[in-house]
Length: 111
Image 1: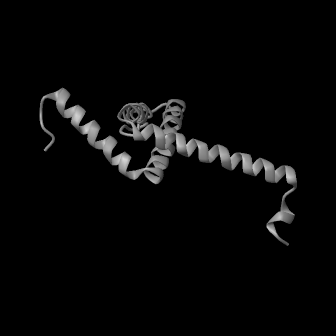
Image 2: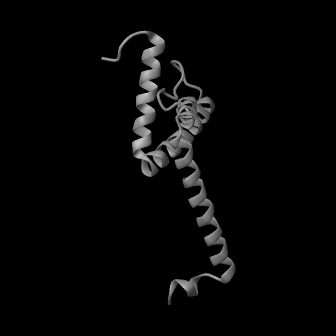
Image 3: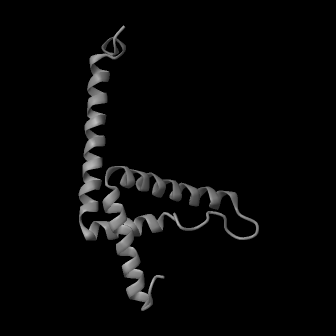
């Protein structure tokens, strides 16, 4: 039995459409990361998702708040994984630009 026997024509069309959408989303992310402004937007989004902070708040964490924060963090982790897979060089450029911006705003140096 071949793969073609497992799927109907409608299934094959749906799978093809999903693949095209996934490819387009990947290309859009690559285009976003190609521009300095796009990298700034993505850095802000990843920061907003809480990748650099804990999801546990206070001495007695509230489970629903923790779950919400973990959901935000999961979205950030998904985008981070896609960026690192699709354009690792632009990810490194984004990190360098963030460090340069933080250094310039603080007036100090990153040692």
